[in-house]
Image (cartoon, rainbow, N blue to C red; front, side, top):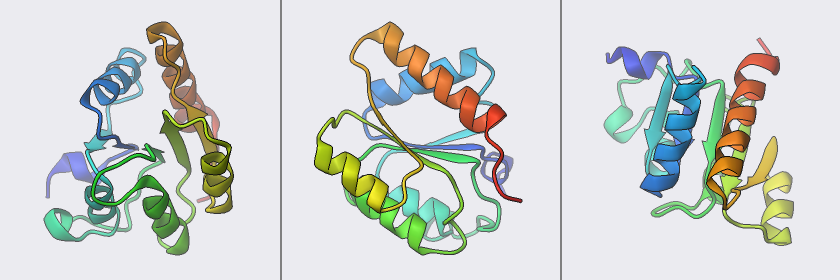
Amino acid sequence: MNNELKEVEILLVEDNPTDAELCIRTLKSNSLANKLFWVKDGAEALDFLFASGAYADRNVTITPKVILLDLRLPKVDGKEVLRRIKADERTRAIPVVVLTSSKEDRDVAESYQLGVNSYISKPVGFEEFTRTVKELGLYWLLINRPPS
């Protein structure tokens, strides 16, 4: 099996290539993206997490340290991805950070009701966006202590 899929620490679920590239570059420049895997829609995220479809040979017991999840995704939206992650005992404990352009109160409230660990509205400015991504990477990969 591809070693890249065995050691994923960050699963980035983002359909916008510009936002994804900015996240990846920011995390790499801060040595936080050595084990990052990017999927471009909700269906691919679920296939990855639950070892189905193109990822059927992936070991489902090896989970990311954190999932960065956009809400506005093609095929399966981010809320449904979050719902499925938190409904399955194999993935429930994985921290999920919603990183989205939505600032709507109902999206925030529903995400927390579904079990999100953090909700961040994507900053519009380049510098603020990169600072935010750097800080969330540092926290979730280096500071946060997940369950064993």
